Length: 290
Image 1: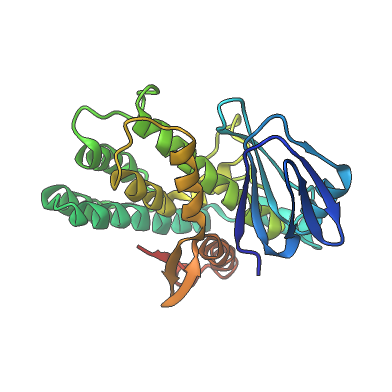
Image 2: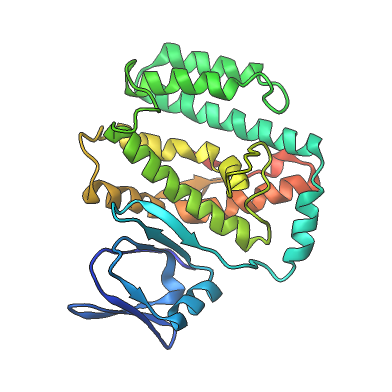
């Protein structure tokens, strides 16, 4: 089972040889492709061979490319993630609206519950109780936008009343956005691996968003990034802080009482969402235990 998150920061050439990725820099290193779950390329001076790119796609390894500021900019996705992708996409287009709303309601409720749990750890009992109350008020499809109301209470309680998600200069927001981008990439990989397309979501429906479905599915997992950042409250956001967030992907979490890395938890959860949609049974969803 792939488990390693490999970060390439220095100028080098990446090549392929006998199921290994060969890193040719000041030193030559080899990493077995079967061990790699995510390849994060931070340096724009890195070159990759076509043979390696093809092998990475065959192994379904998530490749994330960064811009000049070392922030995730794009990713490598195969055209087809499963042998029956055509069937899966037809099913996805035909998902009944009532089922999509039912699953989305469960996702939103779990997200808000996770937010309340984190606030309780920081002794924000009043705000945590408010969020727990919101979970009882959610209507199917969250038509009353309890998610949005909860977010305002949550972020102000977690990071202070002056904090706003629209402040792009705030290092906390830079850290949150970077962490969320890593999560999104992991979900994109699993959506495609299961044969579906990321553009068609359950609730997200933005014509300019190529990852509507992944944005839907990742919502309950955002708290993992939130708690990591709340524990440190960064005064700046640079390479060291970015690598710390990348390391979260290999941290251990419980899913149905079994210990999993975050990447594998995302894999199990994503597959369970599709099972829940197919069976119209939200109880099949394997939420991560926060």
